[in-house]
Image 1 (cartoon, helix red, strand yellow):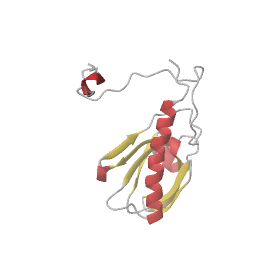
Image 2 (cartoon, one colour):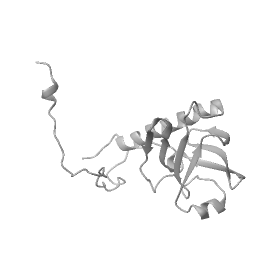
Image 3 (spheres, helix red, strand yellow):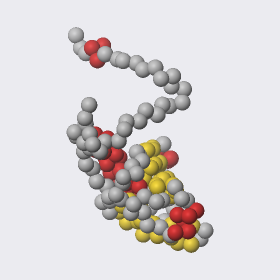
Length: 162
């Protein structure tokens, strides 16, 4: 069946919006509120990522940064964020498109999001419905450990008032 609305793209954009707002709140306060802190994993070679070449060489696929106590000049834009972090004591400017993120975790409240990897990402946070011609092949859903693959169907009739 064809999804003309593009629910997957809409869901991914909404989840990136959650990250954008958490970072905006942090930028407004110049610190993460309360005990909040963020682990942000992103693809280092994704379109639009700007960072020192030696960091890309050190982290050729993905990199996880921590936004907690020592960060500077956090700026949030619609499609990306910028921050200065220290690596080996040397300040480095990073510009990371939200579309490059693969994970966002705030361990202080046990919250996390995982994002679909899109090799076609343009570096912009754009939502567009897909058509049959450009829709990726569906992947087998990943199952949690201990899941035997059995599924349960629950009829909503059991919950209706009589």
